[in-house]
Image 1 (spheres, rainbow, N blue to C red):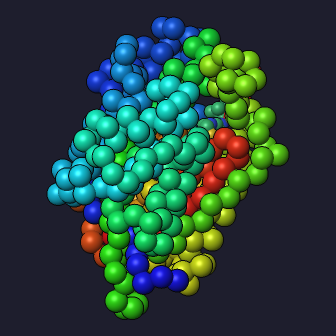
Image 2 (tube, rainbow, N blue to C red; image 1 turned 180 degrees about the vertical axis):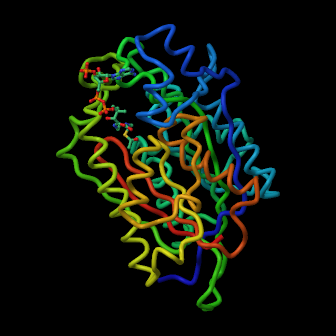
Length: 325
Ligand code: ACO
């Protein structure tokens, strides 16, 4: 292993101004606040306004993360942006962010792993920083996911929202000490056989249309709990830790019932889990960095603590990132 480690030195997030609660959803589709809250824990979601793009949210979250890190955009040499809802089929939305921030060196690219996107992006950036291919990265999860919803399908349209979260990642030299701050491990997994449980029924090379989200909710629920538990346990075991050692779990925010089932499976106390799904709904690749930013800003996550991020999404894809804050 190289003598470098990557550390998160600043977080930021951005949400569209428009908030739609469950009562408003019940005016457009046959549902109710009681059904949505009982099945998912979701009470409201933010929905991008007309003309508000994934890059707009990503740029706002990135500026906030850079400001909190005290880092100028010129000091960045890598942008990795996770999204399922890019501004355009090409170029990568990351390059729009790069240009808007005034960063002219290094490289910028998108990653597509749906709800696991941010975990994948963080793992890629961590690898590049540790290998010395970059020194300072911006890692973003940004979505206008509501643009690919079928607003007549009550089984999916109530579940998702829009938003963005970003972190600044900096390479630091390892001094060989056993307790060091930074990303300790990343684990990524996928299983393409389960493609049909959660997918979009459109795309450039299949239909030439954008398409809409299609989901087998029960299948997704079952695999989500299994895969997220595997991602958490792999991180814990690889680092010779126990569940008790983890200070904060920052899970993908799909559904509070999935999070509660995961906690029961792992015997993990719900008090040490960051939950935002009630207010943000499922923002896909943005969900983990949005939750992370909230817990860092309100002081729950403190220097020296162990923070375990995990996610699972379409593909299926899943994974985890363990960091000492
Ligand atoms: N409002 C009211 N009724 C609804 C709604 C709604 N929004 N949606 C579905 N129903 C109805 C169904 O039509 C069905 O009616 P029926 O019995 O008359 O046929 C009934 O509610 C039960 O439907 P189920 O699909 O069996 O409901 P279930 O208990 O499985 O809950 C849910 C559905 C919430 C989607 C659940 O399966 C789930 O949480 N799955 C995980 C999905 C998820 O989180 N996906 C996010 C992407 S993947 C990820 O991020 C990890």
